[in-house]
Length: 135
Image (cartoon, rainbow, N blue to C red; front, side):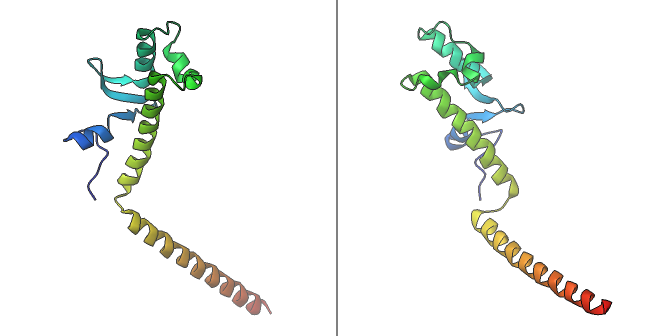
């Protein structure tokens, strides 16, 4: 399966899938915005809020979910969509790091469940044998 999460996108789809990601500290980061690279989403959002007339909005306020009551504001919507994209990207990247397809993971889970049952049965048999040998 072709990887969609990457640090070096090569086409529009890869760029879109990796535009808002999480940095090593867990902050949502835009790859490019306002002529800057790797700008923290909450800092960019606070700047946009101020540019659109919300003078008291700080990056800390945004980071602490202060925009949650601004559900009709396009800037708040953009922030929460970006946050969601960063979280989805992080989880999808971890999945892609396994190198397995969903079908392969399902098969491995099924095989693992069967092996657990066999191990459980083998342990029960061992206990029975140990009890008999103590007599």
